[in-house]
Image 1 (cartoon, rainbow, N blue to C red):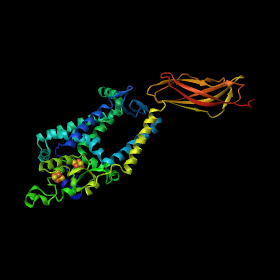
Image 2 (cartoon, rainbow, N blue to C red):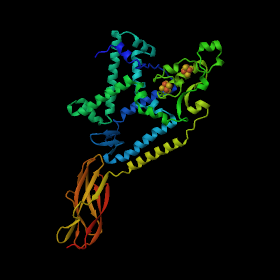
Image 3 (spheres, rainbow, N blue to C red):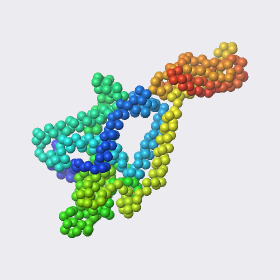
Length: 465
Ligand code: SF4
Ligand code: SF4
């Protein structure tokens, strides 16, 4: 049933209308630093899939190939446990950084912030002008000029979203294959096409439509930040002791500047905020600690000849009673040590991980069997896993103090990259032997010369018929 818009407003009187945020352009030391860092991070994001080590991309999550490439090393499903240490280090690293420097991830390195502030807002300012011009344009009635401007803007955003979606895809599909798939589109590449389309829609929805709403209502990190911050964590904060009572310049002239705090209530810190909040209301969930309000307020303080830092990086404790923050606290020490321990464990295990894994098993049934009147054979199953990115040929060599020999149906044994292969083998010895005879099987990679060994026991029972 069609419901007119005015009627819908009456039916749903409590539904808030979104206040579109038009952040004013600002320059200053933090904004400059964030801009440079943002472009460096974008360059790194684009470059990582293009850089190759050992012929492999620097990072690749090859889901169909069931492998993960990190710095030229291939990790297979059997190595997933190793990645636990890396993920744990990352998780504890976030706790560590947040406990020390608050939401520095959100303000400086989060992809959402980096692309929104350095690409989307810049394109918008370039096409539609500054904050006031953008507001006037949006409030103005629709004209052909306005329509063509809006269509151009959204076409640019769709193109940029698609570009970013393909950069993202190159972390899951080798960039050479991706380039080929783009140049030779076919149904064979339906999975990447669906993925890229989905990502384009998701990125466009997030960066162009949702913007700060994503941080405020969807991002889980913002939700639990209050649990990660304590009174000693560094935050972007307004020094109410110094700023209040606030008063505009006209009131100060009338009643005397000395009767007021340093805040001249110019709201410059509010209009530059990309989250649409007023930092003077205290620490808020929406604040991403981007420090744009610091630059704005510093420029105001410079203009009225007062010291900078009315809005600044400080701990909640420092803002309340002036006591300096203590970066070395039990939680930062514990988080830091856990992060270092986990990262070190991952590096040590990853560097020393064997590229070939071997297991020697006894199949169910007879342990031994006569091969002839003169020999006894022990039956084993040898399981081999090749973790290398290349196929290998593994030469099996039996070593023992006793005159044992090895029967293997295929030797050297080819094993594909990242594959597991099992083979039946027999350890054969003369019938005169008695008891348990230890032996070692050496598995030599014919391509690299790398050798692995596994020990076993052959049984030559005394009570055989
Ligand atoms: S209040 Fe300041 S630091 Fe927080 S989001 Fe707004 S501009 Fe950034
Ligand atoms: S920019 Fe500084 S002086 Fe202006 S309203 Fe904000 S806190 Fe007050």
